Image (cartoon, rainbow, N blue to C red; front, side, top):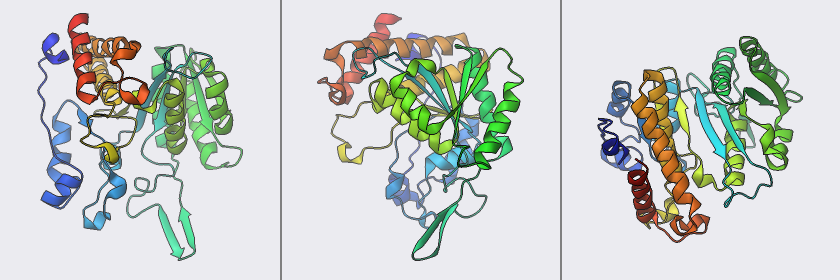
Length: 331
């Protein structure tokens, strides 16, 4: 719709992954999909049920983790803004969480070979947390760049009072990066307190930068507080490649029932357009992203055009039709 409305000239192609490609090709992420990604302008990754995949040896590759590692999509960028008629918060929220995306406690992506989680015997399970100076510094730079275009404040969220070495390293690199951004304020906050302050005083935050697992949890909390986890956009960005991906996971229990809320994926696609527009200096792509975002806001503002999960009556297709109509009206 935006493509036609603004004559963006975008072309779309689709590729099967997940359980469909596992059955057809023996892999949840066929090699030709990976090789194609660097040749296109961006990727929209649909929700996948990787919890149900077989082992990697049997073709079960988590596409989300694989794309992040292979293409070094080190910054998972998740904006959270409260909507007055949907939020449970007493104070407004307007923040961005920038989550390190390639290491941390996530065992399917933090090792060069093998898994970061293992069992020495049947009654013991160990999980390794990997924090690197490079990974910490580059995600910090991404956060400070975003903050420079907003309210110029970065909050580094950590657990260095317990994880003294790994989060100590993370903080060391964030502080180094902060020295190059004297116009941006740096705050530091323990993750326990951050989780509480998101509820009590979300307006204290502008941009949050943190490690993988903390960022995953806090961004889900923030989106739900702001209105719904189904309303949060998300991109996985590297230096050259960006993948749009709904913040929430898959919902196989409602697959094919026409009741899923597509807002998160639509906003993620808008974020992808904006990322590409900034990178290429393309004002048309930036305008397209803004048009999608404003259309979503107008549709969500009307209780009659919301999906059922947030108190409305619309299904997936009728909600999408309402968004398309709002895009046409807003052109």
